[in-house]
Image 1 (cartoon, rainbow, N blue to C red):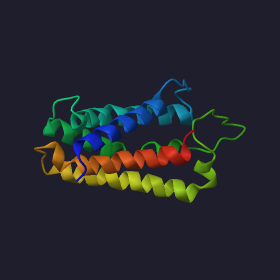
Image 2: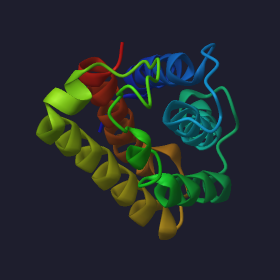
Image 3: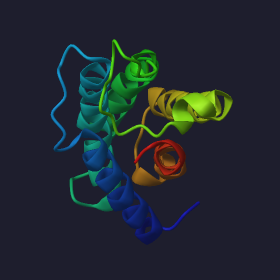
Image 4: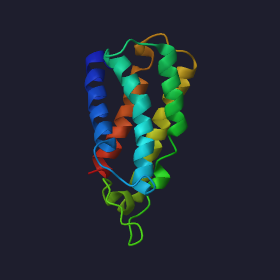
Length: 155
């Protein structure tokens, strides 16, 4: 199991990446990018409190943590359909790199890794959570899956 200080660093890094993903760019809310950003904003609404609990910024509440994990798992399939390939009819300015489409298999693999990590976290929390140590490594896997996708497929 990873020591909490390493988890704090990963939590801060993941939060920074998520904030960058959902940040200052204003997209048409009806565009694929706007719809994608809206789902990623929902990811953030659940992952940030979990990261805060594990990093000690928020008091740990196992029931709340489990609720956030369940909501995150419910959203795990939502954003990917909004990665439509830009074309003349949909010239979306987006933060996605062209590798999303040129390396579709790799992108799909990263999505699968994220979905698996979120599902695993949800399964662990569904049994009840008494301490941060019970969920630290599973949450770290979620954060690493987010980072891997951002590293390869986001500007």
